[in-house]
Amino acid sequence: MVCLASPAWWTQSLCRSMIQWLALTWAWNRSPSPVMGKSRDNPRCYRRTQKELRRKQRHVSRCIKRFSGWRKACRLTAKLHRHVFHQRNDFQHKLSRELVNHYGLIAVEDLNVKGLAGGMLAKSVHDASWSSFIRKLLYKAESADRVLVKVDPRGTSQPCPGGKPAPKKPWNRLHQCSCGLNTTRDHASALEILRRGLRLRTETPAIAGVALEAPSFTYRA
Image (cartoon, rainbow, N blue to C red):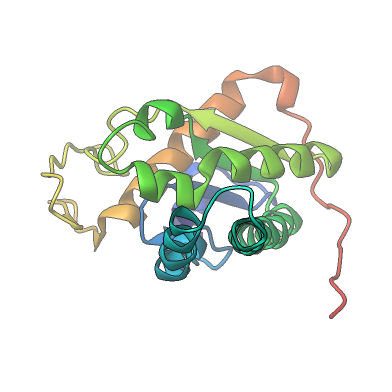
């Protein structure tokens, strides 16, 4: 996942407003980040513990079922699975709160995660848990009077945010356009998602009155 907020020159050219905007786009090695034009590494909680999980699951398969050693091996395996879940859940809760506190409008791709989870990237999709993160982001945005907009994900990586076509192959990770915009593919996609999200916002009167301030929350160590 990549979360890229648009730079100041781009947001000001789109609309003169005091609201800060954020666009989220998807990459398997990144996670959303509230920093302008930056990205944050995906924690990859499952992949980091995959070797240990494999060892524990092999131990379970070699034990005799319903004996004390088998029960103990099952408990240790389940404990490690819970640890991975809690790590991912904690990361998503803290990051979604941080994004909601800093931005008034958040644009995301309306991805078919179920379809992606059935393909060759299934493990990475489940590990990133994009649907879970969007649910957390959605209810936090509603409680803070923020706006979360889902845009059509088709073609978000192909056009230039300035309006010109800039076709790219899947392995091309750089965006180079004749208009002079040279950046990463993910950053350009986030700008395009932001442009679509702002267009949806102006076309939808029901969400025009978005609050500019949201309650702030702090985490205790």
